[in-house]
Image (cartoon, rainbow, N blue to C red; front, top):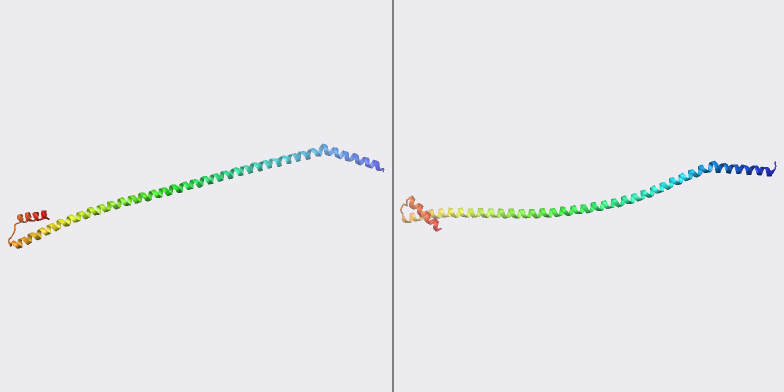
Length: 156
């Protein structure tokens, strides 16, 4: 064989291989590469959208946490204010109740003093009548005795 013929046959075979590859294999490879490129671009776009969504969600979570904190602080403030009001109401109520009890005790003491004075007047009057009876050594009748006791009670 001649080297030129071999070289020519190999060149024709190589040209046929290139033509076959360009006609049938290359379009499938380029379409597969285009499809793969599209999937990668879609994946990157989805990743970017997911990242933005994550950032948005993080901001929303932070905002919700801040709102919850401010609401909790507001609730604590209201609870403290209500507790303060309840303490003041209890103090006022206790003070009023104490004043009422003191007034009732004073009224009861005044009544007891009046009863004691009345009792003492009666006893003093009875003693005065008894002393006067003994001094006079005579019997005093009931009507005169009652008049004498009344007069002594008025003087006391």
